[in-house]
Structures are given as structure tokens and as C-alpha cells.
Length: 315
Image (cartoon, rainbow, N blue to C red; front, side, top):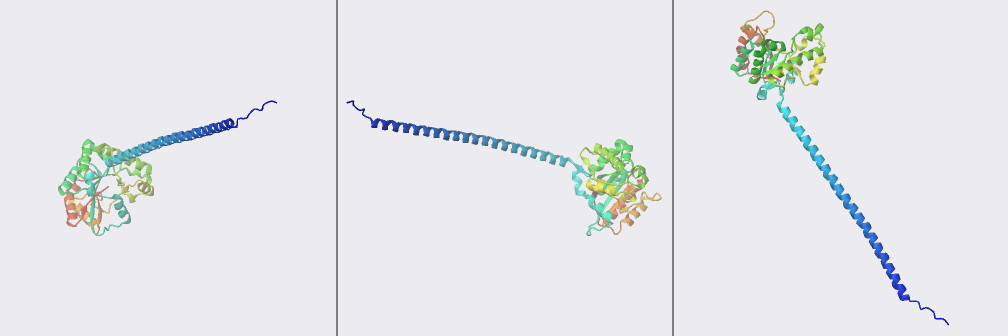
């Protein structure tokens, strides 16, 4: 009778246990690899996020630097800009838009504070303007000069030097057109806005040549006066849009009205037309042939000083 093989159950159990162990080790290894992959992935993502965050911070910092530099340059440019008067003369000047509004409403009250604006049209002239400037300096007052391009060119370098001298002293420089030609500016007594703007722009360019590229004026005076012409709504809108002011007058020495007057008559006219007004915009002329205006000016200034007026310019 044949012998039966003896089954070694202990050996099988050992193999089974070993197999299980190997499976467990494999599973652990797979888990470890998976975790490792996840860790590596997370680390890579973290590093990438940090790099992107750094790039964005650098871009933001650069944008802020560029914006700050732009703002600094704009502020420096703004400081260079000169509007009507030099920086030292700002203490003598007054907002022309407020005066324009007063004139438009015929409201010359000012809460008891008296202010006079001495204004001179049609200069500069090489004959009268120097006399006017001397009187202003002798009396320590400033005025507003509404200049015309044709007279500046007529006077050549001497006229240009007078404008620079006047400006440096603290007077305000304003625009009174280039041509002073009624037919060109107001054909058929009606404003031609394009002609008007082009004419005034020519004087603006002349003033930049004299006073520097940063000079401008927002104050104009219409030849013949704003209220003398038709179709002026278009100009008023243009001035409002550009923060400019057209300044007429509410008093005058009458040096361009009627027969030629001597100095004493000019003084009387200035006093008569100023009475009862706390804000006075006095029209005078410093063009050729107005020597009597220069002679009258000391007594005109004295009248305003004696009656408690402060002298201001328009800008």
C-alpha cells in the first residue's frame, strides 16, 4: 500500500503570510509613491504660486513706481506753468472769472472791501508804456496790461523788453487780440469765433516767445468790449469750457472817447465813473499818443489810495 504524502501546513502558512506581507509592503510603497507624488506636486504648485505672486508684486511695484514718476513729472510741469502773473506776483492778483461775473451782473458790491483794477489796453508802446511803468513803480502798485500783437511787433525788441520788464515787476499780462480788427473779428458786427480764436492765438504765441513756453493767460479783453457785438454766446461758451474770462470795464478815464483830453480831465472822468463802486475795473490805454494818460496816472492812483482801495491785477 502506497504511502500518502504528508502536507506541510506550516510551510503553506508561512508562504501565505509572506505573500500578505509583500502585498502590504507593495501597497505601502504605492501609497508612499502616491503621497510623494502629491507632496512633490503640492510643492511644485506652491513654488509656482510663490513665483507668480512675486512676479505680480514686482509688476505692481513697477506700475506704482511709473505712476508716481508720472505724477511727480506732472507736478513739476504744473509748477513751471505761469498763468498771467509770475509766482511772486500772485499776492497782487485776483480771480478774473469772479470779476467777470460781477461785471456781467452789474454788481459792484464787495462786502465793504474796495478793490480797483487798473487796466491798460493796446500796448505795448515804446513811448507811453515806459512812462506808465515808472508811475506804477513809484507808487508801488500793479496793473493789468491787455496787449495787442500788432503793437508788440510794431515796437520790435523794445516793446518785447517792456512786456518782460512789466511782467517781472508783478503786473499781469492779458490778451487783447493780435489785429484789433473789428471787421475780421466781428464781420457784420457779429462774432466770427474761428477768426477770433486764431487772432488771439497769434498774440498768445508772441507772449510765449517773450515770457517763455510755460506762460499763458486766461484773461482776454474783446476789442470794442464784449457787450458791443452780436453772436457772443459762442465765445462765452468757449471761455467757460476753457476756464477763461473776458473782462470789460465799469469805469474809464475816457482817453479814447470824444475829443482828446488833458490829464486833469482824465482824472475827473476816472473819479466820476468810479463813484459808489466797491469793485472798479478802470479802462485806460498805454498805446501811442496816450501821453496824457501817463500824466494823469499819479493823481488817479492817489484818488484810489485816499479812498481806501486795494490795487489788484487780473489773472
